[in-house]
Image 1 (cartoon, rainbow, N blue to C red):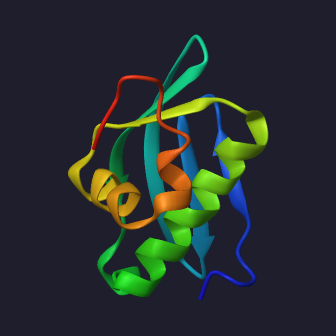
Image 2: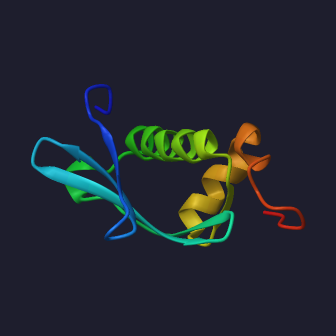
Length: 98
């Protein structure tokens, strides 16, 4: 589902957007110093699936990794994703444990 979709960092609205057909999934964030706080994830019902959610989050984390900034997941579903993916735990700031 996400293969042809392009991840957009809408810095005006402070959110990552992934549009698939007529629906758009969003992860809201707050950027402070060298940290990005992922605060809320909104996935429309037609797009909801574990596979889509994991692919969307992986796209967002890979985008953030390229910028070389730390991630602070404040949303429970995003924190759960980090717990289950060891490679993204390295992106947490020093002293933050999930």
